[in-house]
Length: 443
Image (cartoon, rainbow, N blue to C red):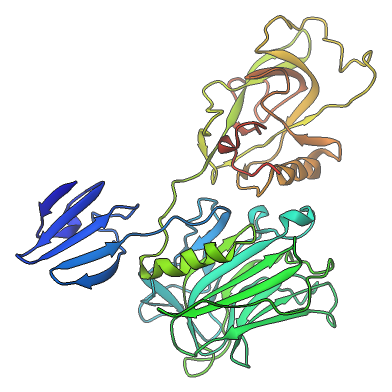
């Protein structure tokens, strides 16, 4: 506990639970939860009481956040993703107070006003892929945002080219709408949710739950209750939320007197949020969500080459197999392995001549390794990392794992991104019993 009198809130750095006195009879009491000072916007939700100013700080986002665009930009064309997965967007034109997109007051900090066709594009990404080749239970997702619109599109990747993808919009009938393609121009599935009051800040959320085959749509005005509907139809197996196209946020084709869209705090999760979790985002109000620490993943290097045996050693060498060591948005190769399961007499199972297999921490793996072109570590699941290996090298390959030998290092045939030079560029490696050390989830 601390008691401090300040003249300029921007020039203090604080932690814990604090009383701050303004003058003689107004005090600010808050529990610090991840806000920023020193010139960066401090977002707090205030409730007044006699002599006191109480503030509830930001709330932690629910798990599974794969895209978060606060839309606080006031210039340039880059729109930052705060999920830590690097899904940054590019605006269709320079952002500014008199531009299109237009920087305006949002519900949490700033927001962006899209009109006359403006928007922002987020390139296709494995972390935003909610269709095949992901397994069905990994194809659920949730979208939420604060909107202030007359009507028109909010976000989506629905493609006229292949009739796949999804689109969320403020429909002409005044309701929240989700569309999802099935590959047929005559069979797009549509779900309508609660009504939205035009040109008024409204919280929206769309939950696509593949386990129940239901879509739930939520809306709530500022300070109002959360309305929810789960309308028919059930989600068919043919519905595919991934079109291969960029995710378009905004894209309103009208003008400022018609289809005019102000968006703020747009989020995408790679799972179906519960109603309690959706409510928590709504309850945060103008305090918003706390920006999470950047997620890290484990990386290894090529540590040695054995010219006699024609093998190499790859290993941890400074990695962190518990919490990860490299920010997941960094582009690095992925270490892949081909490890057949033939009879014990196979050359892969027999330790090659010239290989020292006496060190428990550097055993022969019985496989061949290779590295992919550089890629951000933001795969949604380890199965997606394996799919990337297979796209490069073939169907029997998968992402290499920490315990291919015993642990920490292993020997294999093959090569890496900079072989035979060592040490090599670092590359992503999976670990099956330390989920906090992976950029991706382990199904």
